[in-house]
Image (cartoon, rainbow, N blue to C red):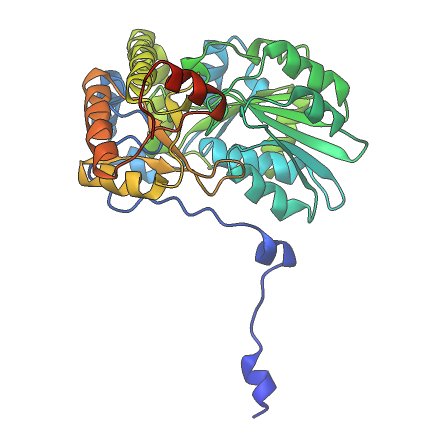
Length: 381
């Protein structure tokens, strides 16, 4: 037998071989989950009632997405043909890339941001992923982002609030971007909308190249059911339907979603818990002298420095999980903490205080402030 023939094997497309991989560190999460920006408490009790009411016969049927899309559209004041339910926002990103990108096209994203944008874009266009990096403030680089738009730009993705930074982009700036690129789709990822409150969803009927994505994993607490949505012009949504499986959202998720949407009082309660907890967390970080980036999401990004990995390990030993974001562009030494309900914030801050001492972490004082501190007779290491 020819030795060369023995080494021959099936290969994936070049784009698949070259695309990045996403490896979420999900193993061993039997602790306080302040690492993945999930709802850390529970979904609405009405969701649990709906799950209990599902019969064995219903599990034998293929799921029907369209009736629930009508409910969702009515809830958000849109028409059913302006809504597509998806298997989480991850699938929405994938469908948008598949529907609107070809080889030779460019997609423009703000970085650091959600890694799954990179994965889906790289699958459709080699070398077409264009990133505009934030400066050290991690705020949206509006002018430089606008300058990145050209005739090859066919997809633009902006998350607001952004992950992992918690920074937001003003609605008027997003509309300006859509106007500046009429032949490109602007996807606004509003996964963390509830914790901020400003949205472009009402602009969908007037802006033909706008797509808005929402998840029901965060405020609604349905992360395990995997359900999200895309809202946009009916023509764009029609393209997404063509590339989507008709059974992409499972029946349990479809049964529970109307119940989750209907319990607005519960969502308002949970969101208020997070907003109060976020303020407490940032105040606690101030007391601990831990630098952080002001956030409008359900998490806060901390600047820990060289001891970032040690902190994550020490916090796990305390029973609290954090997410090390140091591999993200421009985030070396940064660690993210999710905001939970009151008792969880209290525990997170307690564990953080203990862990910082255990790793002998020292706050960094900017050089321009050092002279002033010495002049006041305060010691600084």
